Length: 150
Image (cartoon, rainbow, N blue to C red; front, side, top):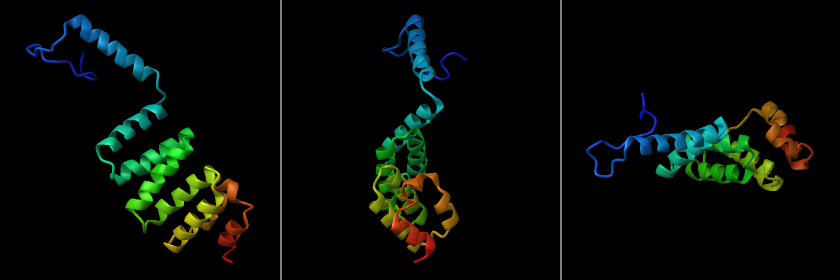
């Protein structure tokens, strides 16, 4: 199945390379793939999808989750902000933005986003209280007021 994962130029193509050059290209490609973790490969894949269509909501959601898992906090904030711009009334987009902001050590912005998520219909306060992404907010009085309903 040679050439299946690496496109090869047709033999009648003027830019066609001989078999030895094609194999070298495949080895280089394989070395690149082998050097990436699955998470890095997935991030690279979704970044390329996003580059093709910047308003792809599901791609933004998945990519934001992936970069967050990778610890790329500012990239997660940027992607979550884009989601909120595209979906201003989506409580889950607001909640995820709050999580990213909390991880980026921006408590006031995170609590503002959480408040908006609740106003838009987010109601899983038990999850909010135990979500590890919101750990930095646990002792913040405004976070406690959201949880306690004050």
